[in-house]
Amino acid sequence: MRAVLDANIYISAVLSPSGSPARVVAARFAGEFEAVASRRLLDELDRALAYPKVRARVAAADADLFMERVGEVTSRPADADRSSAFRSRDPADDYLLALAHAHRVALVTGDKDLLELADRVPIFTASRFLELLERGE
Image 1 (cartoon, rainbow, N blue to C red):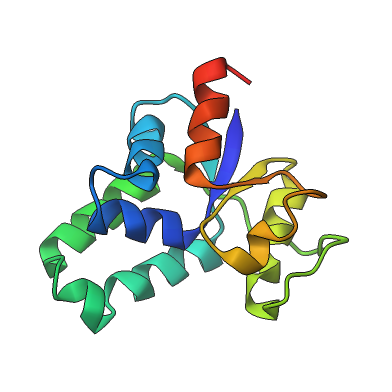
Image 2 (cartoon, rainbow, N blue to C red):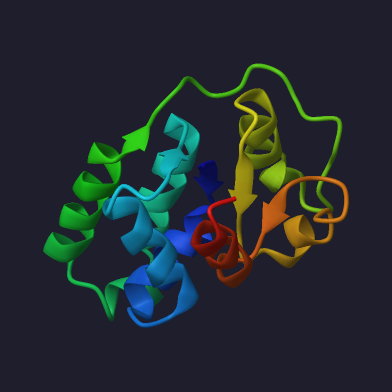
């Protein structure tokens, strides 16, 4: 299985090591599925790890190590040069739809604007994605 993990999944994993997002990231680190991320997604994650609210709970060195580890286990194609047929209520999220569409992979997110499209596009919450992994889908 292959998937794009939204930056919010990675951030949630760092902030709550026992939650579903952390289990998704751990599954990726264990090689249970392939993660796809573009430069834009990795840049967004890097910026989010530097937010004061996150930095209050995650040391800069730990954030750097996390980014390094994510980069090691993530396929990094170029940013999608075409868009998806679907649009989010938040246009800033459309690049995730385009990335998932271009590489024909699922999108795992906690973003409500994206999850609204789950009936038409393969978009999953972290807990739902874990269920799919466990069933080998």
